[in-house]
Amino acid sequence: MPLAFLAEANPITLLAGANLASGLLGANAATSAAQTQANAAQAGQQQLQQNFQNLSPNYNPYIQTGQTGLNQLNNAIPSLAQGFGTQQFNQNLAPNYAFQLQQGQNATNAANNATGGLIGGNALTGRKLHSKYCTKCLSKRI
Image (cartoon, rainbow, N blue to C red; front, side, top):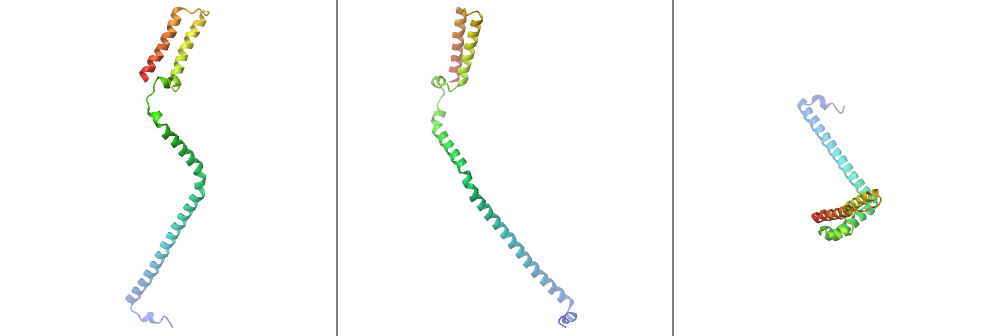
């Protein structure tokens, strides 16, 4: 009988042997689990790299558009950093100025039309003063 020696063996020796065998099996299992985990992590990294390589050409148009816009902004910095003067207002770079001026002049014209087209000195003076007021506001903003 092959296992007959176990009946005669010391119980402490049997326990030590069982513990040793259990430890070896546990160590092998832990090593195997660690290797499985490492392999899974490596496979995940490879998949991410492959996805990046497959998708990155799709982003090129957006990257180029952003780079073009950035270059245009960098080229425009000198004009963006200069002061805003009368010339810029005359070029209609501040549409609010032209809008306010036009609204005031239209209101004066509407008042003149309401009187049958009779334009008196007060109406002309009001139009002139409004234009002066807009210019004064302009000079405060410069």
